[in-house]
Length: 88
Ligand code: SF4
Image (cartoon, rainbow, N blue to C red):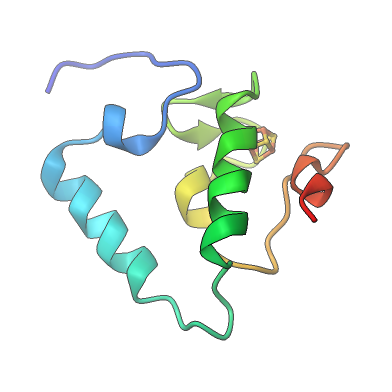
């Protein structure tokens, strides 16, 4: 895969298929007790996709892959505004 710089992309657009599947497997195996509900997960990722801090699927404030960070309920957006807190 060629190296690309992709602002506001999630990992399916920048990772190879095998790595992406590995990440998805990891996310699906997160214990439901600590996992973000699907609706909130999608909303978190939607907020990230509109955020200037998202580059190549990674948040430049914390260095996390947002798809993985957002999948754990207790995690929060590292921006000073804590953007995910807007989700009700
Ligand atoms: S600052 Fe928050 S909303 Fe923006 S990419 Fe990072 S985690 Fe997502």
